[in-house]
Length: 540
Image (cartoon, rainbow, N blue to C red; front, side, top):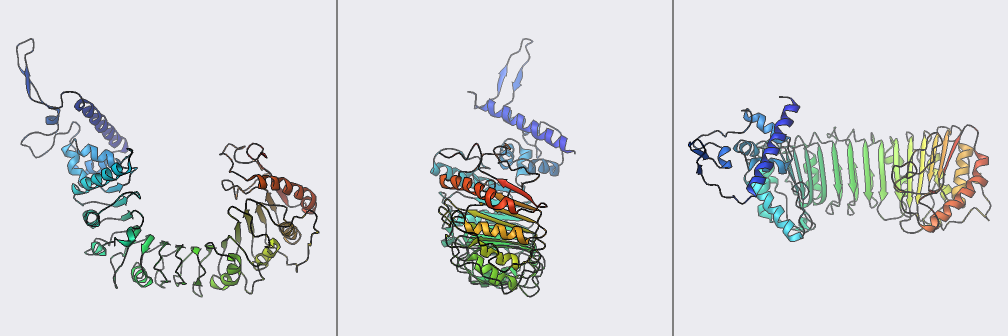
């Protein structure tokens, strides 16, 4: 049966369901057989609408449509949303049998359309609806189980385990569990439900706000490709025991797991290519021997990082969470820990010291992005932007360099009234550097010196973009063919809010460009300058 025919049947079923619902809202809610006398004297028996759905004494339902095999009805039902499928099952015995095998159990406030006012009422309705649906489900044919409860919802642990037991059956592929905050102190995910072959087909597990304690030798997730743990209580030994037997694992994400002290990934996880570790503040050691780990994103405290001598990590995004000197850590630790890096993003909220010269080099680095943020204030006034040349010198194959500075005020010494010291550091030719962007360009003397240094020593430079505004909705926009218009002018969306101080600073930066930069730009280099938005960034 083609998709057009399936859609036609689904539409017909929905229309018929709507008509029946409208009929039931009339005064005649209780049907009774009635006899009427037509003009010709014959007698007609009016049958209640409910009796049109099933014939008394027969095993098969009579559906007002084609007589199809049950697997076709199951397929039709699977194309409906969860709520539409449940409603169809309530009015048709044919769909009721198919509903007990509905494969995609996605329980959220949105999918169940619990939009009534009052948190207590929504919570009760949500739990009651989930319980009714799962109680009537056979557990056969489930492919996806997603249970997501809002923060104000109280779920009984025994009831939750019963739901999981119904849905986690052989053949299931995805298990997602979003529990309210602080449930990890009182609820532990029952690993026993994954025994007996029930976990062998699971490809994706996402757990939040619970404890997860897989036993030693846990071998129930051999098909698992993605594992995401958020606010989960699990130790390094337990996690190691788990992932050591997940030979198909491709992506691993760990966020806010406060019991992790070390993370060790074994050599035989050959398919693991993507790793995220975020806000696991007790973590001290990350050791990975996975031979094909390609992308690693880290947000947290300083850790001892070991990616193996033959590390294939090529994309690294790192930030020391709310701690100073991310740049110092990156330039001193990463060249030896990840020697094959090709893409590096470093975010820093504070740099107490200037960036030193590197002892080792990023021999394969082609793309470097450095993001400096002062949050609601100015970025460290004592930091010397010119010291970022250390990264350029340590990256002989670098092709793209992006520096973005987010701040609500500029406290660095201005270039106006202070002499430039271009050429004050040993010059290294950055022969591969072709593209440079500075987002949040300002009148800081050291930033102007950095820009002049690049113009003088990047012998293959093709384009230089100086954006005087850091707009979180527009950052990193590639300016092509001299098009420097803002997003609102291009009718993409409105510009982000910018402080009055930074709007004034942006106009100062435009003066800097005209006085100190334009005259130094080689003829072969395309200079793109972006000023404040004429519509959104007017000085109040």
